[in-house]
Image 1 (cartoon, one colour):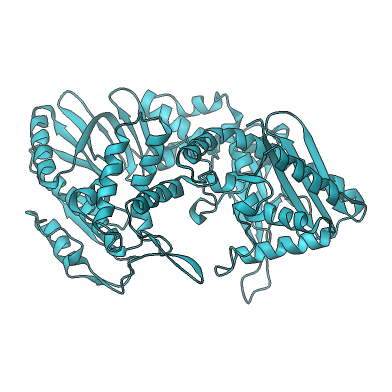
Image 2 (spheres, helix red, strand yellow):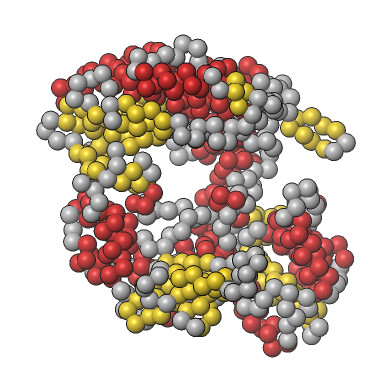
Length: 611
């Protein structure tokens, strides 16, 4: 890590800046290309110096944006800011064009300096996980969250260049902080790259798993790609239509008519696309509703507290590596990959057992096992075969229904929850043996394995939002009750789930706990509006990514959005309507007292509705 350098650029029609900071030492470099100064040669010399010492440049979306612009400068040797700005605009335009999104990308072998892109490692280039540096500054609880100081495309005056440089340095400092949060992930990728002599450095987790699986397929002689004039093309099995009867295991049958009705309906369906196939497919058995979906089955008791006590115990039954083992046990495979796919899938599962759970090998094999199912429905993937997708998801749901059906014959047993890979039940202590017998029957039938854990209590708002307290005191949190969030999630208002958990598990007073909460960052919230809109604090315009908290004596926060098509009036949309806030993009501006009423009301929504 002593040879890593954090970097970022800013591009305007007449100004280009590049800030660099050593990953560990507080050593900084700042370069400028403008009408008043041209550091082109110094930048080229600096990059060559980095290359000579085999250094790495670490950025945020640097492979997709920053590096192609720097590479252009390196090729030219010298240029003005206008040329680099034109290149930047071309890169941005191509990234929005599916046919040309790779047009400006530079192959790793052609780069002057090795790149580490934190944006790619964290898979923020996925639409569902898209996260900008400003959101990360909020999640990292930075002292200052700063938006771009001048509109994109603005011609800057000389005195504005120093403002831009300070902003550029701030972004580098924040990227450096995030780099240190990412070090374990980088080391993991370095280990894999060294061991397998294949570049994993900028792979996201899912891509690591898929690439490793492909590598093993190719080692076994399975051709995964075709090569032609247009380059490499993945082999696939697209299907104009799928009879779902072809995907369902023929031996599945039910005693309960509610389940059999769903099974019969599935068998009669022929689909031309997977999206929407499960819409409104449900089965209600003994008052419990099972909801089928492409991502898996789900169902739950709602707005209740379920407890183990002297008469009953809550048992959670999970299928071990459910989707991979469904494929391995039943021989499911993308048609173009054949039986060898199943063999390798099974080998990887067995291989993972040989490594310690925290080892790089175990982590990589887990990614390889889990990444295949999702990619089998990806039209750009070598695993693409929607019949494989449907075989996994249909049988996965139906087999869990088969387990639930067997369990529901046990007197006094109540289904608490079903979700993708398991079933949770509450059962009398003297019927636990019957649960074990039902599980043993199911495992013999399916050749899959069930793992058991026990809950002390469960606080269920619905299937996606709940807290479960295990017998050993550890806690499982989902949805609105989750406060240990990922980097791509919004870490705003964490005082709400944190206090809700203490209320439910410890019985503390909501208001008293909120009033005495020690961490002011847990009260902070975040809002973002696009560049086409404005954000008003009272009547004062503030930056488009904004940190704030509900405050006594504050002002209302409002989004000012462009008119809808055919309209002329700008739209005003309240943020936290009915409440006043204190904006504090600089944390030192958090001077007004917190309005605890807001947070108390939000916590009550998570707690008081549970009967």
